[in-house]
Each structure stands twice: as C-alpha cells, then as structure tokens.
Amino acid sequence: MKKIFLAGVAAAYWCAPALAAPPYQAVPAAYNWTGCYVGGNVGYSSGQSKINVPDDPFGGFPSQTLRTDGVIGGLQGGCNVQPSRNWVWGLETDFQWSGQKGAHEQMVAGGTVPGVITSSLIDTTGTKLRWLGTLRSRVGFVADGMPNVLWYGTGGLAYAEVRTSMIENSFEFFFPPVNVTETHVLSAAENKMKYGLAVGVGAEAALGNNWTWKIEYLYVDLGSIHGTSSWSGQFCVNGACSPTPATGGYSNKMIDNIVRVGFNYRFGDPR
Picture 1 (cartoon, one colour):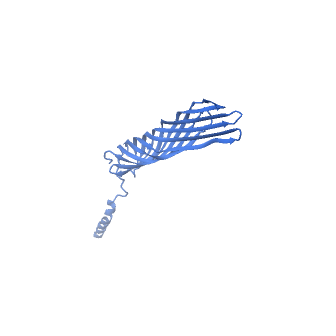
Picture 2 (spheres, rainbow, N blue to C red):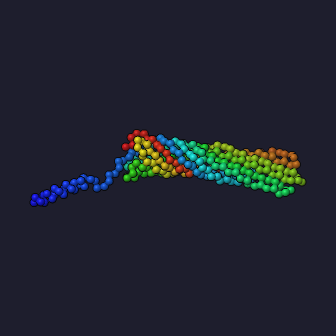
C-alpha cells in the first residue's frame, strides 16, 4: 500500500506541469477596430484614356487611345464600427494629387503627288488626371487568429478633374490650273470635373501605438468626359481666301488602376 501511495505522489509530481499548461496556443487578445482615423498614402496609377472627335467638321481626326500613368498620393480619413468579432463596417474618404498623364503625336496623312497635290495632317493629343477624390464604404473581415489584420473590400463614388488637350494641323495645296490651298487647325484644352465609380480591395494591419499601415488596389472608371473643340482655318482659290471657323465636340473616356500604400493614426484606445 505504501508503494502504491509513493508511486501516485511521483506521478502527480511529474504530470502537474503538463496538466497546468493549456492544451493549445492561446488566442491573441481581441483588437478593437471601432473608431475614426486619419492618414496619408502614396502609390502608382496606370490606365487609359480614349479620345474621340465624332463630329469633326473637316473630317480626318482619328480616335486615340492613350496610356496614362504616374505617381499619385494624398490624404484619407474615415471611421469603423466592429459590431462582431469577425466583421467591420466603415466609411472612408480620400483626396489624391496626381501626376498621371499621357500624350501621343502622329502623322495621320501626308504626301505629295507631283503636279497634283501636297498634303499633311498631324495631330497631338494629351490627357492628365489633375486630382482624384473618392467616398467609399468598406466591409472588412477579421480572422480569429489574426485580430490585428483587417481584410476588406471597398466601393463608392469617385470624382476627378481631367485635362484634355488636342491640336490638329492640316494643310492641302492643289497645283494649277486652279491654285487651291486649304488649312485648318483644331484646338481644345479644357479641365473638366467628372464623377464615376471606384471599387477595390485591401488589407490593414496594426503597428502599435494607435498606428496602422495598409495596402490597397482601386479600379476607377470616370466614364466619358465631353467637351467642345474649336476649329479655325481658311480656304483659298487663286489667292481669294475666306475663313473657315467651326466648332465640334469631343469625348474622353478614362479608366485607372491604382495601387497604393498608406499609414493611419487611429483615435482612442484600440484595445
């Protein structure tokens, strides 16, 4: 009996530490995403701009699809509500300064037929995204094992100012017996504000001391921007000339893909 008692005491002594330790790794302390924040971001924007002049009064201006890219950066702010352990709802707004632009120049037509005609047609088009703002909702998911990381989708309103510029120079010269020359110049350079749609995905993680960092992708579709171009020129027959002014419309359809990183400072105690 004494031997059995001593064996039991020894077993309890050796097994006590194992019984005291948890059988699994403890779940990290919950991170509270509720609250408001402000921050900044920087990234790169790449997209395309399609310029079209459907009612060219002189004919010949081709549609142009420009690649546009450049650095983009700005400020953001928003608020989150975490109604449950795994879900976060939020609203965010941001304003971006942009260096995104694109331009193209080409000889559309030109040549000489000796004794008959000399002609040329050169056009230059350009687009610049001057600034961009968004107002978006966010829906986020927090995994139980990673409470300090927020995975989210986002979508909402986009608004921007876009500069569209076009210059086209055309010249035609018909040789005798009838001396005919025709020249015209198309010009347009306008800043237009446009509303559109922004959707994307991202991830945000806590750094400590109320700071978080994030990485985000946004797709922005501003739709078609419409404006007016002006034309000037003259038509001459044997030295007798008359002006040929005209106006025409243009459209500029612009889309963007933005990848950016940023930092936020959250107000209040995140725990």
